[in-house]
Length: 143
Ligand code: DQA
Image (cartoon, rainbow, N blue to C red; front, side, top):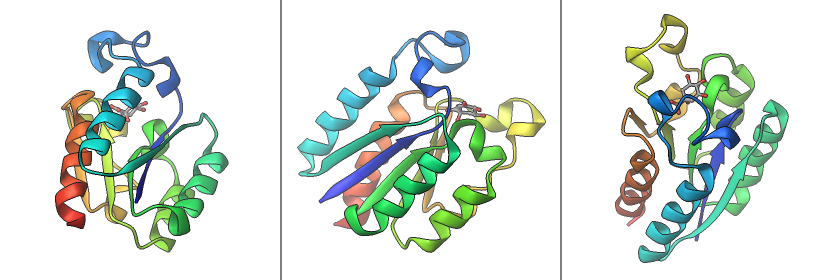
């Protein structure tokens, strides 16, 4: 059983980009933490990052048949993308929306999420820990 972990634009810069907001953990550190946590629960991980909206839509569509659940940090597309909303709506998987920062504490343009209506759970402001929390949640949710 495989959990897809999808990351949106600029998250490849994690650890270097605004560490005061996003922390010093890199995306590959997060990938390693998520893989360890998932394997402790008996899950496989497919980890993906793209700066391109359509590439994320393709992965969400692939998840319909290849994944048992999804963790997604849509990054800036959270606040703009009807395409991600619709792609998630077409799938029937449990989805955890993760944000490193507490988007509600930041600029008003970050307060709205097109993804949240499709999410089973939302974790924001827990930093990199949010991803492993999401894995723990999904393990009990799918049990
Ligand atoms: C983010 C929050 C978004 O508003 C922002 O565009 C990001 C990262 C987060 O993880 O806190 O790129 O999703």
